[in-house]
Image (cartoon, rainbow, N blue to C red; front, side, top):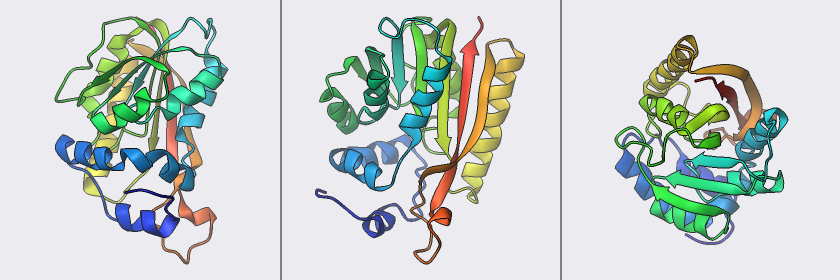
Length: 234
């Protein structure tokens, strides 16, 4: 795949697509890696900037010294936004070797590691990151709910953890189940004293909806999303 694609071409690629296994996910993103940045620009994918805006508003330390773990880093869009906001030290993790190759081209990451979270542990040390962020991968067939505690494990006490997800395929049973399990796990972790929630917010214009009918209005062509921000307590 190459070149600039329009919304209709992207709709055909993504229509009714719900990945259900890591292997399918990895193959899809390996194939998409070269066109990813241009395609998400076409889709007005706002999630990376939303994450960085919330992190920046709540981060109290020295941004230039902060260690950032970017989980499901893709081509490096989150790191690019964070660099613009003053952060400088990034480690990225992703399932796709193609995406990791694109992320390496940014020159922003001191380390990039491949892992399928859930089936595999997060390949980083415990308690070393000032910020842990994952954007766009908390859905059925992507990062498993069981891996959320791995993100928390990687963070220092007092660190920020930012989770941003789109409300894709909300009528699909697998996605409904994932959402229920995710909300329950976030609350269980707070009840256990692992972190304190700072932000829980729905955003209306997460990205253009590739499932929307062409005849729908511009406002209806966007999916919503959720932003969660936590501070690790122990």
